[in-house]
Image (cartoon, rainbow, N blue to C red; front, side, top):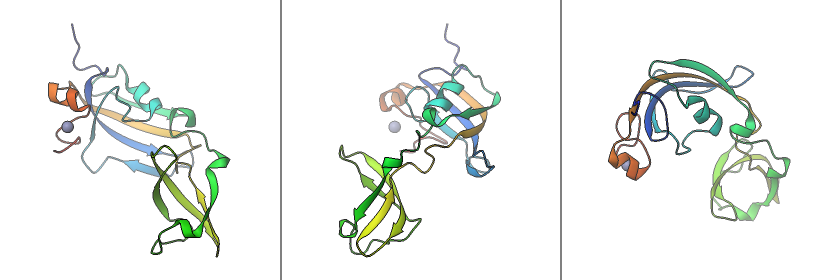
Length: 165
Ligand code: ZN
């Protein structure tokens, strides 16, 4: 017998969440907007959060502290690189704090954050902005249901809080 209200692979789960760092900084929250709908087991969430949601039921609330290894990864000092200024488009805004999207050797999208700029080089941190950080999630499980056949085929949730297409 399937228990459709228990979070398992193939569930469509709707959650309210609040993500806070150890210093109290709120990074993201769904409160005040529509809750997030995702398909469980498809790695749409960071592993530590997806694991913590396994087996939960509708209406449950919980908090979980996700270590960097189960979140956005450890901070890698080698991720900070000096890039020749001429590798950027002429009209690129080059200033400390500016974030931009690039691709790595395998053509995967990666996020870069500019740390410093001089005449020749741009110092870029290619670590995820949340790398090395413990992620403190406060979660409310709003709804758990079985995915429809179409959702299973697409590999993501449809409807409110999910993909709209
Ligand atoms: Zn779809």
